[in-house]
Length: 388
Image (cartoon, rainbow, N blue to C red):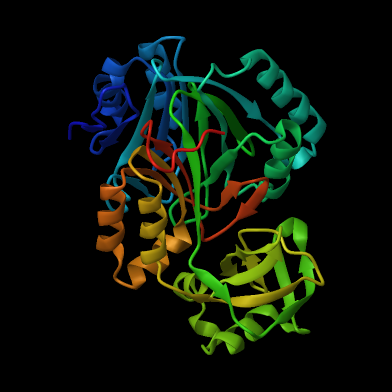
């Protein structure tokens, strides 16, 4: 099937979103045809199947020339001005007329290379130079979603680059949790992350949203394996057994739907953040999508409206040329379970939201779960335009 370009019209060159399905061998060519007219400085590619990403990003880089950086990651689904889809590759092209971009690898995530990463990040920032007058600067961060190292990567980037707004998502693999892929200009590395520094002529504003409030009861993590992201016991009981008791279901019924509806919350940075559950371990522990230490006090999350507050937040921004979104796969599971998929599609279409479903989200130096993390590119002169 041919590409379906959805260009954002207006007096300036704005980001362009392309949704492609069909023969993966033609994906790069279809994206190139759709975005070639905007001479992109940066192209982001989100694919439900990651194996072809090195070839797709390499072909696009070759076709678009050295002035374009092409980044990609595997996803747990994508969205392009509409509902969630598992059968389409989503590409977002940022025209050179209004954007500059440079990207680097952060490799060997399990080897405690934080000092090397900090040096590389600072060299990148120094070589990038200051933003032009009236331009915004921000960072995009894509991380191997199975590396279990998002916390240290997000914190390291935050420490290296100070007050630069940095947002991103963890590469996914549907609900298989088997293999994730990242690619940059045809190159791919396992257990790695990609950081991209971007300057934009558009004002930008962060959009952070989750739909949970803490319940009154508390629980204590009495034994955990933080490096493995596993909770072994809660309240001195096997974690899966105690969690099932607290949410009122049989232990055998635990799975993605139960986890999406009843996340664990912990307080961090003055607010409650979600620590999503991935699966039950053979030892009846809980495998998480974020790290938790022994002794952590947690509470269950109670769901509020999953769409009304998100729509209100997007509406208060004013007109946006694009909202680039990183939306957790377990949020998607909960939305679809509640029959709210069409409502989300309407919101994403109305507010020009495009991006991918993640295994976790990054913002402000934190790694979180079951959260929508986005960056709005605002129309100049809008009521709530803010430059960072």
